[in-house]
Amino acid sequence: MRGISNLHLPLHPLPSLESKSKMIEAVIFDMDGLMLDTQRMATKAWKYAAAEYGLNFSDELNLKLIGRSVQDSMTILKKELGAEFPIEDCRKRATEFYFEDISQNGIPIKPGLLELIHFLKDKSIDIAIATSTPRSLTVHMLQVAKLISHFKVIVTGDDIQNGKPSPDIFLFTAKLLNTPPGKCIVLEDSFPGIWAAHAAKMIPIMVPDLVQANDEVRSIAYAVVPSLYDAKIEIANLIG
Image (cartoon, rainbow, N blue to C red; front, side, top):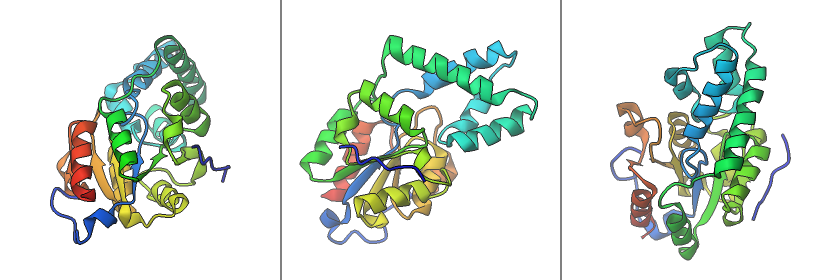
């Protein structure tokens, strides 16, 4: 395991909401597609890179990668494209396109993010990031977006062995926060993220980006909401 940086439910009631003001101690944010409007940028980068290698990178294939770690994404691509396709070279080229796009255009943040962050700080709720993105890219993106100082703990795909939908990344984040999993809300835009939060016995709230919630995800999410503004309302109701 690499070094850790301390950079400074179904749509129905939870099983028990007694003393709900004390129930929530932390909110854990996914990053890409949830805080940062980067999924479309990543898709464009992969399409450009794949085209250089004579491949049409389909939207269907792209959706299978959302929320996955680099290792899991490579496994999916190898299965879909075959062992002969130069996946690592294509990924490196996609990364180059991605960084060029960030350099030229910056990183847009999702509407309602800053308002939610400030609301949680005012309520003395710890906030953390748990993202499948590698640490070096995570830190760079958060610095570009001027968000890195807001978070008590940042856990990335480099820090755990099993990526989402395994609960490992969320359980590890809760451990660093010294917070019981049941007192953590997780904000996610992907199916693997919601599955992982549910498996960790946390309180998953989905804010869809490129992938809309299906019946399965709705059955395990505490709520599915259209924006972070709406997520703030759900969280405010939970913390009292």
